Amino acid sequence: MRVAYEGKTITAEEIRALTGFLQRAEKASATQQASGYGWRMFFGGAGGVVLLAGLFSLIGGRRKKRSVNQDIYDRQVRSE
Image (tube, rainbow, N blue to C red; front, side, top):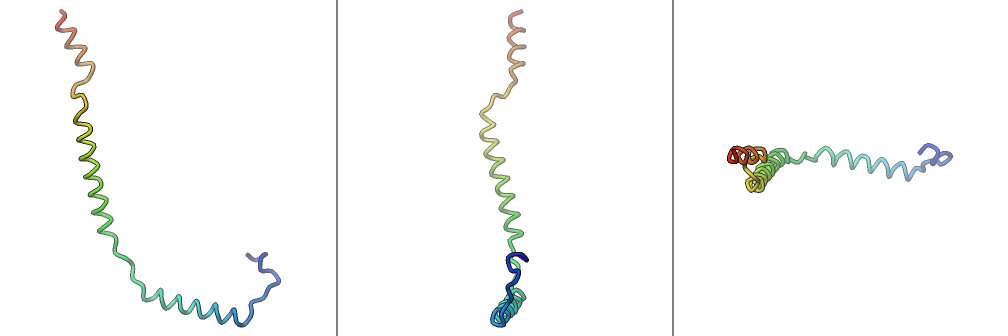
């Protein structure tokens, strides 16, 4: 920015405008309150985890309950 503004001076009108803007911004920031999203974000995230865990358990419940190796072993034991 130094190169872009080299040789260009700030006028008295620009100084007044910048000073007024910065003073107004300072007053506005002094009265602003931080938003309290902490607990809502926590419970929203915890609810999402519970929902996903339930969904995965429903999807995973349809999977095969025993291993393939157990099926092969049972088949060999019956053939003897």
